[in-house]
Image (cartoon, rainbow, N blue to C red):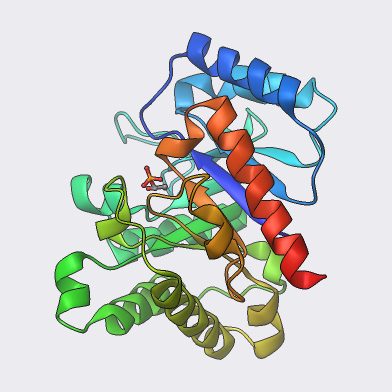
Length: 262
Ligand code: 13P
């Protein structure tokens, strides 16, 4: 059974002090649940957030993630951060291919592929983001776009377990807009992603891979999303910035999945 995984992508938000305040409140209210949690702060707050997690009683279920990496281990890449450097903070997961990186920083399926390979060479776990734009959806190209992102991003990559990767489906038109995709749209895409992974890897690996939905997820809409068969969690932007919101989102999400399975 796939364990739900909820990840917070803080994007370029929160100073070290603000990150510490969030974590203190979040952990104070935290009650163990049967979900994996990943917190992805900006690079500057990795150290302090990581220390707070590892000093808590919940380090087995709350993990530290980062939002990007370079594919080389070191070298003349001004402003970049490598995976060996990120590992110094005990990072466990790396968000890769987020649409904001594709849109604003010219990330391509080919650079995503290099980063994924680097992540595996460092024994880390990617949260690999894919998603279509509104124009692509309206032109009827959603599945072609997602198929290309998956096939090119995962080119020449072999994994041995469903635990080795998390896929995040984030339709670009739903990110930060309040326009959450409908349950029908989400299930159709997640099922398509799982079929594609089945061909790329194997049916048994694909059935164990966790697929998150991301895009305007909030405590008020997460329940119906988590009830979907092929949704295994969420990648959360705006609603992960306040500890109360994020905590209630996690609790509703995990409970919805438990109920549907019981
Ligand atoms: P929002 O939840 O703010 O729409 O952001 C989603 C996202 O991009 C998470 O990676």
